[in-house]
Length: 204
Image (cartoon, rainbow, N blue to C red; front, top):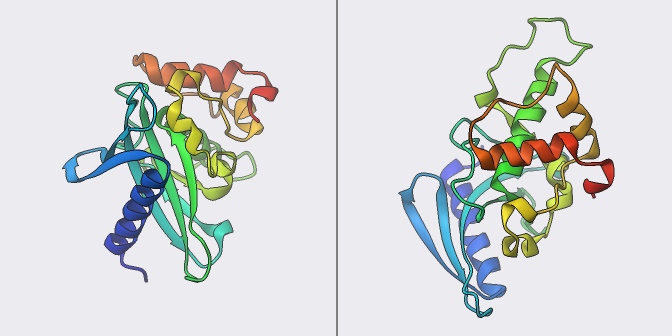
């Protein structure tokens, strides 16, 4: 079994390198901030945009089986519109490249809720057979597939970012069995409204 701390280290340093490659000055927080692994500033543009990034890394022999846990702390809504996750998929075969998925924080929270509640209430599964709470949510690589390589989203505030979750998630969000969580926080609510109300064309 892979060392989880080593996996985290690989993911964080990989993201730092990719940010530097794209003109971001960055610093690892070294666990100094609860939900921010990297602070970065765009030093190429005149705006000097500042962002916060949380990295989640997972290994897998097959990329189709890679998933990331998005627990209660990771589902906490954005404090401001420049918070992002970068999900890193690390193949066990070290001759293969790592894969990166750049996701606005509230999009990841929406994916965690919808994925878990759809699994929990799947009509074909007898009621009560699945009972894990939503803070045990895991999101598979395929759900974030359209976010792969989207480093450009780091230049887009959360409320303006396209929702790239699977189109079927819009349908799930409209179903009573899945729905969307009640939340007083405006940022999270804004993303969830987008998932519920956006036309299918909005899910590229």
